[in-house]
Length: 213
Image 1: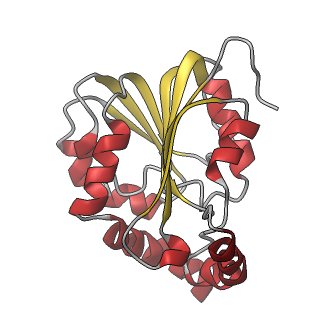
Image 2: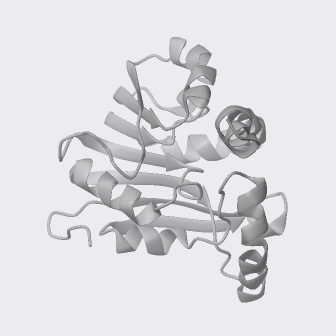
């Protein structure tokens, strides 16, 4: 195994867990997940940092991630979950579930990492039931044009340093282009390096009449 692959598959899940834990991000997770319920799919489950913040309205969670290391790190969180958690190793771009399987699909700090975010979002649209909801909490492109230019300049190095993480994706545009109706969207600058701290938190709905494109 090469050094780069070793870093991405074995070390980076530990780095991600350390970077994305803590009270401040926990509060953001709680706010994003407050109204989730029913049969839920989480894409990019990682080490399970969202689990403590899912409400009692969740009947079952299917947790998908491509990293075996990250899923092993989630074992303690899964053992404490108050609802069934079905962990599966899959890519977000090719989900193995039938159409209209879930009431909600959750992405948190995942769309920055996926190689083809449009494919992942159209897969989410496919597996959602009519009026099902896409819940997302992501960092991405700043609405400030000057800062966005700096994000474009920094992004190649950021991808190299952080195992493919992109800081300049316009998350709201990606969600709309996958066929979702945005019913809620917040963009704000959280504490941290400005180039990587523009946050998108929102909800997209799979309407009865609009299909993925």
